Image 1: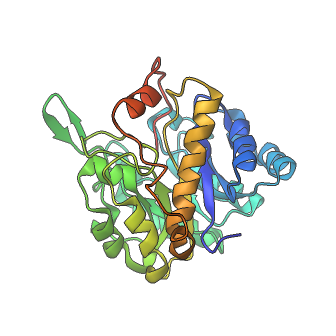
Image 2: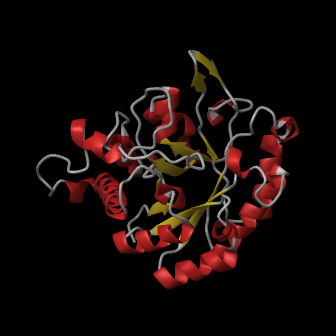
Image 3: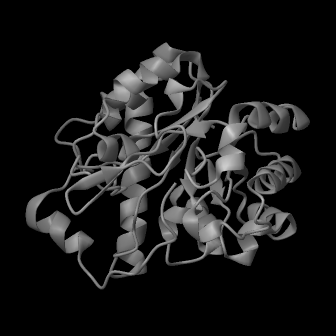
Length: 295
Protein backbone atom coordinates (compact mmCIF):
# COMPACT_ATOMS: atom_id res chain seq x y z
CA UNK A 1 0.00 0.00 0.00
CA UNK A 2 1.31 3.51 -0.81
CA UNK A 3 2.38 5.73 2.08
CA UNK A 4 -0.81 7.77 1.61
CA UNK A 5 -3.82 5.52 0.83
CA UNK A 6 -6.09 6.71 -1.99
CA UNK A 7 -9.75 5.92 -1.29
CA UNK A 8 -12.82 5.96 -3.50
CA UNK A 9 -15.78 7.77 -1.95
CA UNK A 10 -19.02 5.91 -2.53
CA UNK A 11 -20.55 9.29 -3.46
CA UNK A 12 -18.34 9.26 -6.57
CA UNK A 13 -20.39 6.49 -8.19
CA UNK A 14 -23.82 8.11 -7.74
CA UNK A 15 -26.44 7.37 -9.07
CA UNK A 16 -25.07 3.85 -8.68
CA UNK A 17 -25.31 2.57 -5.14
CA UNK A 18 -22.83 1.79 -2.39
CA UNK A 19 -21.99 -1.73 -3.53
CA UNK A 20 -20.88 -0.44 -6.94
CA UNK A 21 -18.17 1.67 -5.31
CA UNK A 22 -16.52 -1.42 -3.83
CA UNK A 23 -16.56 -3.20 -7.17
CA UNK A 24 -15.09 -0.19 -8.99
CA UNK A 25 -12.50 0.43 -6.27
CA UNK A 26 -11.30 -3.17 -6.61
CA UNK A 27 -11.32 -3.10 -10.40
CA UNK A 28 -9.38 0.17 -10.63
CA UNK A 29 -6.90 -0.52 -7.83
CA UNK A 30 -7.94 1.96 -5.12
CA UNK A 31 -6.48 1.30 -1.66
CA UNK A 32 -9.82 1.52 0.11
CA UNK A 33 -13.28 3.04 0.25
CA UNK A 34 -14.83 6.01 2.02
CA UNK A 35 -18.45 5.20 2.84
CA UNK A 36 -20.85 8.11 2.52
CA UNK A 37 -23.65 7.24 4.94
CA UNK A 38 -26.92 8.20 3.26
CA UNK A 39 -30.35 6.77 2.45
CA UNK A 40 -28.95 3.62 0.80
CA UNK A 41 -29.50 1.00 3.52
CA UNK A 42 -26.22 -0.75 2.68
CA UNK A 43 -24.28 2.42 3.57
CA UNK A 44 -25.72 2.22 7.10
CA UNK A 45 -25.14 -1.49 7.70
CA UNK A 46 -21.82 -2.58 9.20
CA UNK A 47 -22.41 -6.23 8.32
CA UNK A 48 -23.24 -5.51 4.70
CA UNK A 49 -20.24 -3.19 4.33
CA UNK A 50 -17.89 -5.69 5.96
CA UNK A 51 -19.16 -8.32 3.54
CA UNK A 52 -18.49 -6.08 0.55
CA UNK A 53 -15.01 -5.21 1.84
CA UNK A 54 -14.17 -8.88 2.27
CA UNK A 55 -15.65 -9.95 -1.07
CA UNK A 56 -13.80 -7.30 -3.08
CA UNK A 57 -10.68 -7.17 -0.93
CA UNK A 58 -11.04 -3.40 -0.43
CA UNK A 59 -11.14 -2.08 3.17
CA UNK A 60 -13.31 0.73 4.46
CA UNK A 61 -10.81 3.33 5.67
CA UNK A 62 -13.13 6.30 6.17
CA UNK A 63 -16.78 6.89 7.06
CA UNK A 64 -18.58 10.11 6.16
CA UNK A 65 -21.18 10.90 8.81
CA UNK A 66 -24.71 11.68 7.53
CA UNK A 67 -24.43 15.47 7.67
CA UNK A 68 -26.16 16.35 4.37
CA UNK A 69 -29.60 17.90 3.97
CA UNK A 70 -30.94 14.65 2.53
CA UNK A 71 -29.59 12.58 5.43
CA UNK A 72 -31.06 14.53 8.36
CA UNK A 73 -33.30 11.57 9.25
CA UNK A 74 -30.78 8.77 8.70
CA UNK A 75 -30.49 6.76 11.96
CA UNK A 76 -31.93 9.60 14.03
CA UNK A 77 -33.08 13.21 13.90
CA UNK A 78 -30.52 13.90 16.65
CA UNK A 79 -27.21 14.95 15.04
CA UNK A 80 -25.23 13.74 18.06
CA UNK A 81 -26.74 10.28 17.72
CA UNK A 82 -25.80 10.29 14.03
CA UNK A 83 -22.19 11.07 14.97
CA UNK A 84 -22.13 8.33 17.58
CA UNK A 85 -23.58 5.84 15.13
CA UNK A 86 -20.95 6.89 12.58
CA UNK A 87 -18.25 6.25 15.16
CA UNK A 88 -19.72 2.82 15.90
CA UNK A 89 -19.77 2.02 12.18
CA UNK A 90 -16.15 3.10 11.76
CA UNK A 91 -15.14 1.10 14.82
CA UNK A 92 -16.87 -2.03 13.52
CA UNK A 93 -15.16 -1.70 10.14
CA UNK A 94 -11.71 -0.73 11.44
CA UNK A 95 -11.86 2.69 9.77
CA UNK A 96 -9.70 5.35 11.47
CA UNK A 97 -11.62 8.39 10.16
CA UNK A 98 -15.15 9.82 10.44
CA UNK A 99 -15.66 12.95 8.32
CA UNK A 100 -17.89 15.60 9.90
CA UNK A 101 -19.50 18.81 8.60
CA UNK A 102 -19.98 21.96 10.68
CA UNK A 103 -23.56 22.31 11.98
CA UNK A 104 -26.23 24.01 9.91
CA UNK A 105 -27.33 27.40 11.23
CA UNK A 106 -30.79 26.09 12.14
CA UNK A 107 -29.27 23.36 14.34
CA UNK A 108 -28.94 25.83 17.19
CA UNK A 109 -28.54 23.39 20.07
CA UNK A 110 -26.09 21.25 18.11
CA UNK A 111 -24.07 24.30 17.05
CA UNK A 112 -24.02 25.86 20.52
CA UNK A 113 -21.83 23.11 22.01
CA UNK A 114 -20.42 21.58 18.84
CA UNK A 115 -16.72 21.79 19.70
CA UNK A 116 -17.19 20.40 23.21
CA UNK A 117 -19.61 17.72 22.05
CA UNK A 118 -17.29 16.66 19.25
CA UNK A 119 -14.46 16.26 21.76
CA UNK A 120 -16.74 14.10 23.89
CA UNK A 121 -17.79 11.88 20.98
CA UNK A 122 -14.18 11.55 19.82
CA UNK A 123 -13.19 10.45 23.31
CA UNK A 124 -15.68 7.59 23.12
CA UNK A 125 -13.84 6.07 20.17
CA UNK A 126 -10.13 5.78 20.87
CA UNK A 127 -8.02 5.83 17.74
CA UNK A 128 -10.75 7.26 15.49
CA UNK A 129 -10.49 10.90 14.39
CA UNK A 130 -13.47 13.11 13.52
CA UNK A 131 -11.96 15.73 11.15
CA UNK A 132 -14.23 18.71 10.46
CA UNK A 133 -14.55 19.59 6.78
CA UNK A 134 -14.30 23.02 5.18
CA UNK A 135 -17.54 24.02 3.45
CA UNK A 136 -18.55 27.10 1.41
CA UNK A 137 -21.08 29.95 1.26
CA UNK A 138 -24.13 29.52 -0.96
CA UNK A 139 -24.72 32.04 -3.72
CA UNK A 140 -28.20 32.48 -5.19
CA UNK A 141 -29.70 35.25 -7.31
CA UNK A 142 -26.72 37.51 -6.73
CA UNK A 143 -26.87 37.06 -2.97
CA UNK A 144 -24.67 35.06 -0.61
CA UNK A 145 -25.45 33.36 2.67
CA UNK A 146 -23.61 30.95 4.94
CA UNK A 147 -25.73 27.95 6.02
CA UNK A 148 -23.20 26.77 8.62
CA UNK A 149 -22.57 27.82 12.22
CA UNK A 150 -20.35 29.42 13.22
CA UNK A 151 -19.15 29.44 9.59
CA UNK A 152 -17.97 27.40 6.62
CA UNK A 153 -14.26 27.59 7.53
CA UNK A 154 -13.56 25.30 10.52
CA UNK A 155 -10.14 26.86 11.17
CA UNK A 156 -11.79 30.06 12.42
CA UNK A 157 -13.10 28.08 15.40
CA UNK A 158 -10.29 25.54 15.65
CA UNK A 159 -10.65 21.76 15.97
CA UNK A 160 -8.17 18.96 16.66
CA UNK A 161 -8.47 17.56 13.11
CA UNK A 162 -9.67 18.67 9.68
CA UNK A 163 -10.76 17.37 6.29
CA UNK A 164 -9.64 19.60 3.41
CA UNK A 165 -12.01 19.52 0.42
CA UNK A 166 -10.55 21.10 -2.72
CA UNK A 167 -13.87 21.44 -4.54
CA UNK A 168 -15.21 23.35 -1.55
CA UNK A 169 -12.15 25.59 -1.70
CA UNK A 170 -13.10 26.45 -5.28
CA UNK A 171 -16.70 27.19 -4.30
CA UNK A 172 -15.61 29.43 -1.42
CA UNK A 173 -12.83 31.13 -3.44
CA UNK A 174 -10.29 29.92 -0.86
CA UNK A 175 -6.63 29.20 -1.53
CA UNK A 176 -6.34 25.49 -0.72
CA UNK A 177 -2.65 25.70 0.13
CA UNK A 178 -3.21 28.55 2.56
CA UNK A 179 -6.10 26.66 4.14
CA UNK A 180 -3.85 23.60 4.53
CA UNK A 181 -1.32 25.86 6.25
CA UNK A 182 -4.00 27.04 8.69
CA UNK A 183 -5.05 23.46 9.38
CA UNK A 184 -1.43 22.64 10.16
CA UNK A 185 -0.81 19.35 11.93
CA UNK A 186 -4.58 18.89 12.25
CA UNK A 187 -4.90 18.11 8.53
CA UNK A 188 -6.03 14.50 8.73
CA UNK A 189 -7.96 13.77 5.55
CA UNK A 190 -8.31 15.16 2.02
CA UNK A 191 -11.29 15.09 -0.32
CA UNK A 192 -9.77 15.21 -3.79
CA UNK A 193 -11.88 16.93 -6.41
CA UNK A 194 -11.52 20.02 -8.55
CA UNK A 195 -13.50 23.15 -9.34
CA UNK A 196 -13.40 26.24 -11.50
CA UNK A 197 -14.07 28.79 -8.78
CA UNK A 198 -17.39 29.80 -10.32
CA UNK A 199 -19.06 29.78 -6.93
CA UNK A 200 -20.69 26.35 -6.96
CA UNK A 201 -19.59 22.95 -5.71
CA UNK A 202 -18.52 21.01 -8.81
CA UNK A 203 -16.40 18.03 -7.70
CA UNK A 204 -14.61 17.72 -11.01
CA UNK A 205 -11.99 15.08 -11.73
CA UNK A 206 -8.70 16.53 -10.41
CA UNK A 207 -6.82 18.33 -13.15
CA UNK A 208 -9.98 19.48 -14.96
CA UNK A 209 -10.50 22.62 -12.92
CA UNK A 210 -8.36 25.45 -11.61
CA UNK A 211 -7.51 24.28 -8.11
CA UNK A 212 -3.93 23.48 -7.00
CA UNK A 213 -4.73 19.78 -6.63
CA UNK A 214 -1.29 18.62 -7.75
CA UNK A 215 0.52 21.14 -5.56
CA UNK A 216 -1.54 20.19 -2.52
CA UNK A 217 -0.87 16.47 -2.99
CA UNK A 218 2.84 17.07 -3.52
CA UNK A 219 2.96 19.17 -0.33
CA UNK A 220 1.51 16.48 1.94
CA UNK A 221 4.77 14.66 2.62
CA UNK A 222 6.41 17.89 3.76
CA UNK A 223 3.43 18.59 6.01
CA UNK A 224 3.95 15.32 7.85
CA UNK A 225 0.58 14.12 6.61
CA UNK A 226 -0.26 10.58 7.78
CA UNK A 227 -3.91 10.41 6.78
CA UNK A 228 -5.71 9.39 3.61
CA UNK A 229 -6.90 10.99 0.38
CA UNK A 230 -10.44 10.20 -0.80
CA UNK A 231 -11.43 10.82 -4.41
CA UNK A 232 -14.77 12.60 -4.24
CA UNK A 233 -15.87 13.54 -7.75
CA UNK A 234 -19.21 13.84 -9.51
CA UNK A 235 -19.88 11.23 -12.21
CA UNK A 236 -23.66 11.50 -12.15
CA UNK A 237 -23.74 12.79 -15.74
CA UNK A 238 -21.57 10.02 -17.12
CA UNK A 239 -23.28 8.55 -20.18
CA UNK A 240 -22.24 5.01 -19.32
CA UNK A 241 -20.46 2.86 -16.76
CA UNK A 242 -17.41 2.92 -19.06
CA UNK A 243 -17.25 6.72 -18.90
CA UNK A 244 -17.67 6.69 -15.11
CA UNK A 245 -14.92 4.09 -14.82
CA UNK A 246 -12.61 6.15 -17.04
CA UNK A 247 -13.14 9.24 -14.87
CA UNK A 248 -12.42 7.34 -11.66
CA UNK A 249 -9.35 5.72 -13.20
CA UNK A 250 -8.09 9.17 -14.23
CA UNK A 251 -8.66 10.55 -10.74
CA UNK A 252 -6.72 7.68 -9.18
CA UNK A 253 -3.87 8.11 -11.66
CA UNK A 254 -3.71 11.83 -10.86
CA UNK A 255 -3.59 11.17 -7.11
CA UNK A 256 -0.89 8.53 -7.38
CA UNK A 257 1.17 10.64 -9.78
CA UNK A 258 1.32 13.65 -7.49
CA UNK A 259 1.56 11.80 -4.20
CA UNK A 260 4.69 10.12 -5.58
CA UNK A 261 6.60 12.81 -7.54
CA UNK A 262 9.74 10.67 -8.21
CA UNK A 263 7.62 8.04 -9.93
CA UNK A 264 5.75 10.73 -11.81
CA UNK A 265 8.99 12.11 -13.21
CA UNK A 266 9.39 8.98 -15.32
CA UNK A 267 6.22 9.77 -17.23
CA UNK A 268 7.09 12.33 -19.87
CA UNK A 269 4.59 14.28 -21.92
CA UNK A 270 1.41 16.18 -21.09
CA UNK A 271 -0.80 15.26 -18.16
CA UNK A 272 -3.22 12.63 -19.48
CA UNK A 273 -5.81 13.53 -16.84
CA UNK A 274 -6.41 17.13 -17.86
CA UNK A 275 -9.09 17.65 -20.45
CA UNK A 276 -10.83 20.73 -21.64
CA UNK A 277 -12.99 22.34 -24.26
CA UNK A 278 -15.28 20.09 -26.28
CA UNK A 279 -14.02 16.86 -24.74
CA UNK A 280 -14.79 18.04 -21.20
CA UNK A 281 -18.20 19.26 -22.29
CA UNK A 282 -19.01 15.89 -23.82
CA UNK A 283 -18.00 14.09 -20.63
CA UNK A 284 -20.18 16.41 -18.58
CA UNK A 285 -23.19 16.16 -20.87
CA UNK A 286 -26.20 13.95 -20.38
CA UNK A 287 -29.46 14.14 -18.51
CA UNK A 288 -28.79 15.65 -15.06
CA UNK A 289 -29.89 13.60 -12.07
CA UNK A 290 -30.24 15.07 -8.62
CA UNK A 291 -27.45 13.75 -6.37
CA UNK A 292 -27.58 13.41 -2.58
CA UNK A 293 -25.33 16.52 -2.37
CA UNK A 294 -21.62 16.23 -1.80
CA UNK A 295 -19.63 16.36 1.35
